[in-house]
Image 1 (cartoon, rainbow, N blue to C red):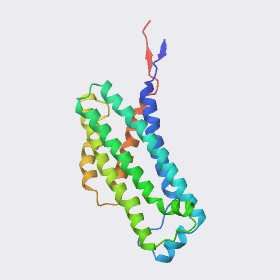
Image 2 (cartoon, helix red, strand yellow):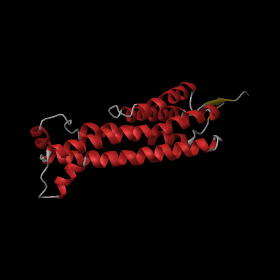
Image 3 (cartoon, one colour):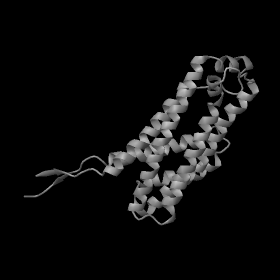
Image 4 (spheres, one colour):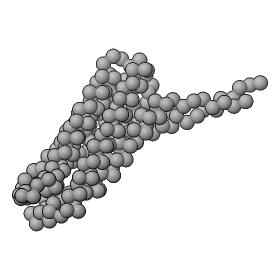
Length: 222
């Protein structure tokens, strides 16, 4: 006779929150894609003075905020999984601290990156200087997001190292995280490469946890 073991519920909601974070953040990028800082003054002014583009930027900020809320749910769940697996004392807290720092810096980055269109929406007298827009674009969309991924390397490294003791992740993902964490920290000058790496890691962890929620058929001998 076959029975279906109940899937671990915590793995399921942690996995789905991680997938939601990645999906929403990917969706947010093309919606409000702003011109790059090297574009001409006319291109930058034409983009930001268009009401449709202003709306897209606000939608981008909203999607990013929801994505980061989903990430915080994922982060809390991962910490609980580490604690339940008896991970060495500092690692659950280090992982949570790194993830929380990522969320805060990323949220500030998205807020700064969408500050120009938000100002147009809430002010009738705002006049945009293209160079000001370039500074805001570079600070919000590149520099702060690069910092976010860099501090997020603590999450990746702590979870991967703790998994060597708890076996929360498969070995290939442990090694991938241990290699990626220092590279994320060193890739700070790159164009938000560290944040992309963090998203890829969250996606991989979420898929692994979701696959573990599949019911396992247990066959009992008569």
